[in-house]
Image 1 (cartoon, helix red, strand yellow):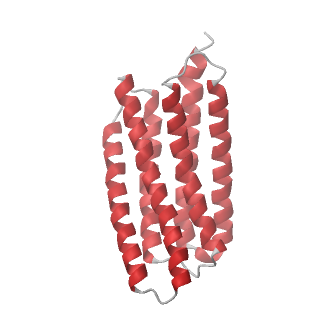
Image 2 (spheres, one colour):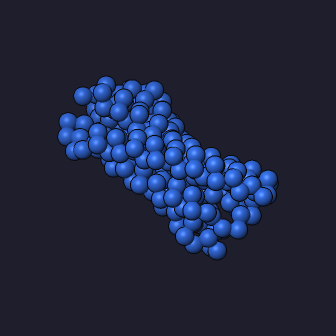
Image 3 (tube, rainbow, N blue to C red):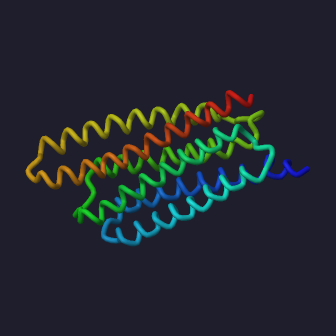
Length: 207
């Protein structure tokens, strides 16, 4: 009986909470692009989501040390949580640099990438929510495919953004700052794909 509760509910609750914080951070990052004069407020909200997610990750990892049976392989649980945490950490890093580097306004590329992040993290949240019942995945595989397609689009956007940045490089310092922000935003999209990969591995092992 001791193992039933963590197997059936506790870990899944924490997976879903983490995915929700990740999706929330992406939405706030997109709001930051649309409402840049209030950037400090949005950045604080992202940081809070990042802190809240850290707590969930720590609780989940601690829980693994206290139960005999886990819903999936312990290594897979660790990777799943780490990859989701990477998404939100990279969003937080990008957002902070917009303030630290005193960027006047986000450009069209950051806006596009933030919109892709919202789509990808929403799909990720839906995919994580379906881990509870892999016997009825309800379109899980299609969501993972869509996350991969978004990552490809994000790569194309990032290449175009960097090319345009260097083409109009009148201020070398601004080039360095913006490229770093582009990179963190792109890494967040990449980490969504990494999370999709581990979800796919979990599905294959457990069905």
